Length: 212
Image (cartoon, rainbow, N blue to C red; front, side):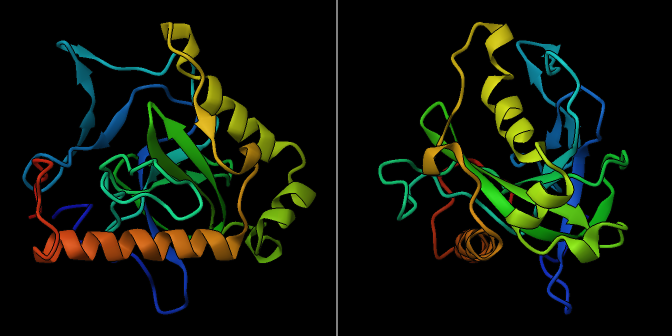
């Protein structure tokens, strides 16, 4: 089973399915191996060395199945920046560590448009749909009301996490502000359509991606 291809993106009630790669309060950089058959979730390796964040991540982090950020497609509101050739990332803010490779039902609340080394790398802000706070969280403004400071914390963490490795901070579109729920849903749909084009063969697979 591929976590990228064989898990549905949406459920009938409008929620999304989230595949957790990196649980809250851990630092090992696990990710879906998009270039390998069945796309196993494994720790990223650079020059033979397993990769870690310089510090633990305060949220659950992972991806949305059946999405893809096309490197050749610039977003209308962020011209000149193509996608990062990966599924769309999720930051799940529920506060309870989840399992690597676990699939969870989540509500999308908003998103940050991170720009990493000249590539657009959306971060969809979500919460587990069975979380006690979920009924109160329906849009990005609700997050600030119920969890004040959390959104800025997310932006700053992703902006700065590469600095200890000697790299510059990441940039963000929209003046480093998160977009709202409806915009985030449009991003999810746009990247799902890009994935569908790739998976069907309508868009050539020139990125050495495993589509089965």
